[in-house]
Image 1 (spheres, rainbow, N blue to C red):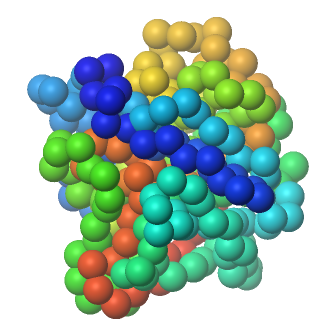
Image 2: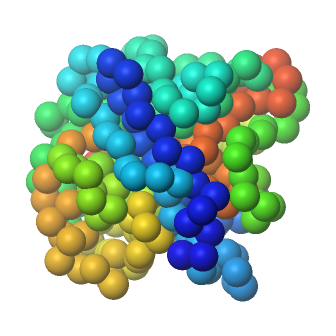
Length: 238
């Protein structure tokens, strides 16, 4: 992709860290990727070599990851979890990159599965913003994400185009892992262009959940421009 030089590497100290990809445009619903230059950059992660989660705080926990002030590493925090809903606050002081789990009942071989998530955002009094955007003009959004053991570009995947532009409201997203055209990797490759690698990744998922980003990237983080908002995720697979 022609925007390779605008990505940002980040390594997380004790636990984590990952990447970002280019985000798609649209209003609060599942969105189609825009036409024109964005199609050349869709799915690309941030600059530098990919780094990895070592894993969430507890394998069965839902963990969200905020960028530290340097924007080059992620700090893990345990999300609240009750009655199948993971929740945390998106605030104006930190950019949130991920909400993931390594729960064994939700990872491993997910061949043929569909991911679904009912997402609710409430309490926002202002717009959402992102960092290190790259100039593509797409609003901050949330989308599915999964990764596998290893450090190749094809170990990291984002749902593309399925996403929800962050705003107060509720939306249920669904993305089929049986359709590689609905996913792109850290290097911007759509799954059907590397079908063997995509199938291998789906068969050995290590972490799964959601990724936050905007403008040109899928995981450069999202924050409230002011105040805070409650983010709730009811994730499942079928």
